[in-house]
Image (cartoon, rainbow, N blue to C red; front, side):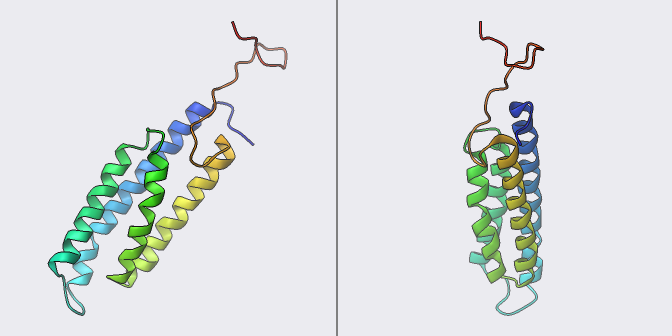
Length: 135
């Protein structure tokens, strides 16, 4: 199944991907509070990692309109999942975000034909059941 208007579907899915990345960035900003209360506490390196990750996730939300935006978002799921090494609760939170991201990629594949490629051009219909001739 492909979308009747792939360009419009790609825009909608890009918006959903951007929203997910912003939520991931916000969730990452809550991690230092949990780290500060257990074990070694919040070190400078841990804080820097989390702040940079949150910033990169939010900036990656801004590039979801570009051709490689979804690929960048997919790569960022790995460091997000690795925040589970800092706080065990993040295995569940990041895992949920990764599952949502994988679902988004699956929907993108079904609607656009490829999870990472650009959308195909919409085929115009002239009303007779076939594609309209190109001028």
